Length: 148
Length: 460
Image (tube, rainbow over all chains, first blue to last red; front, side):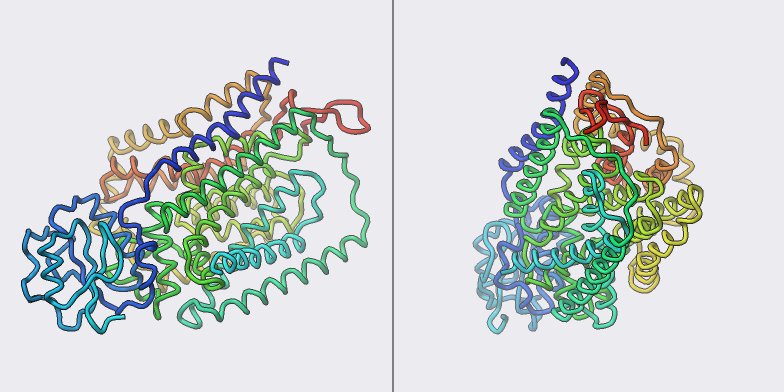
């Protein structure tokens, strides 16, 4: 009798205790920052082959890693083209986006911007002809006229 | 619509798997046999269609809707062959079997707990798919990313070799991305399809653990899936849509087909070969596992070696093609030299670090609950059987290959161990759980067999 009771307790922990505790843990987790598909579903598969990439100056390395992977996932197979600085190596200093879009290749029709986008950055992109098309929060996609 | 399409795509692969099982194995009569047949149908079907999708991708350059009629043709052919084979087999008298004992209240409770736990696991997979489209870290950065490229790019394999996309490991084999892309070919891109696939592999793993642990009526076999379900890291990885839980499913299923029912015949060996041969097409560690499994079969029973090797062939051929013609460089070979790798291999400090990490991860798997559960079960009367040593050999070599990769990795060793040891252990864990309980006796669950008036015997 004691052996059966011991088994029942063990089985309850293994079969229900652990799975339910994991489920509760998952239920409390917030969605990850920059979750790609949910934010870019409208443009998925219809982007031009090359998209510019801008990283805000105060994005941490961990954030950058997460953003970049989510962006790659959301935009694949679009090639990310770092036009406003070298996002993988050199942080873009504040105010770096050119006032009239200098340095942005003429053919570039979309820019993925990651991190908190300051008002002056958004204004500079707007002056260069880009407007926010999709996304929100930490990851936004700016598209220039003529882009899908 | 996309969810329905994904379900239809999975159903097509299950139909193929069922046809292959009917073709290769005799009808299942007891719970563990049914569980093993179901596990084999799930993983063999998914693997067969991934191999077919790879061939289509090579011929047409990309995955698209043209795959659907080809997939349907494979499923129809496999089902027809399976049904014909079963009809022919039923004309012959079946060998007598001992009757299956009905489980008593406690045995029924154990089965219900496994079902309930599996239901909770399915809910968790769905929850993560809803909260985190694209899955966990590795799925976003690697597996599902490649699936998107397979369906969107005009030359997907050429794109995957480009340095801009160097992060998602261009040398990793494509079975999982092909399987996701295949479901998308049926219903369009969705976060649901990879989650559905993850749930299918997780379910197959639980079924394989039950099937591998043996057909003891109402007995210790149920402990294997219970222990897998109670492993929190396995549970977490099921929801992450990575490749380690699927590889664990392939390993457990192929070992179950080879060792759980000795003398099951050449058909089961063929199916085991197909499943084991898909492992190298899923993850690089699978190369070692499939080779070691072939060596174990050669040692165990040469009559089953030929069908096993025939089963291995499609997966091996696809892997060889991918590695020789399509794969990019491995991170193991970047920024390093052979001399550097040998120096790292000979460093005793690295050996200490790796072995300590493995010992800690093994003892603490599932947060220590698994070790405590086994201790409690031993206290409750669990009597393990003498280990089937040969069945452990492929598992041991798979583990050794993981250790070897850690020893030579050019990446920061402490970081890599911290980031992945508990995850890669899950490639071994379900099969290890099954082998732990293979043929074991557990008197509290042994109800009398009908017509015998005595407890079920453990020996097989």
